[in-house]
Length: 269
Image (cartoon, rainbow, N blue to C red; front, side, top):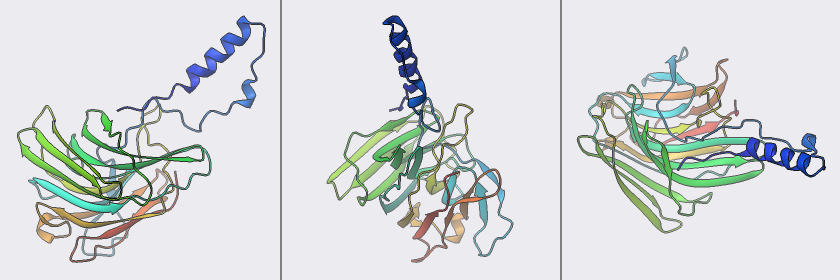
């Protein structure tokens, strides 16, 4: 479900009504959000910049303007899974957005089959929800309740052709969703990933300001049933930076035989 923002239209209608009735509209007292996107898309493909210049571990590191986490890049991938606890958003004002997901494709291909959760700041209010997306198709939002602190497990499974099964379970709230969806084309299946993403899009197509989510720990991260850090899967660590090279989100080294890691928020944009 695409989330639309009719704020500017509402302001214009208010002004027109005031003129028609001889009244006045205090336009200066109405503060639009810092960014007014036409849609908010929690998923999508990686916007990679290139290898990090200060690699310290044995796993290669890439920098991206919208992703942070780990991606396996050997292909072909048939499944990916992980668990996490929904982090709380710190909302001090203005609008920010962040999503947390697992998926197949998107690192080096033009499609992504993914499911996860999000926290958006609408002013000082944090809004939480779960979603799935068959990118470049639109994201679809589940209507189930999501709160900070909820424990999630998700799996994306390739069924054959362009068909995928997307599963997400909120064991805290006691609900789960399984969606079988078609991509409409043949997927590359060249990557599988567990990711924090800066949601899209500004009017110019850029990333939206990133919600302060503190940190998030992904556990039990696997691809094709093996730990995401398995050397034969060609894992890559991805860290999120802005256009000036400032770190937005960094991720820890893998632990627990290559299945667990933590990503930490540093700044919004």
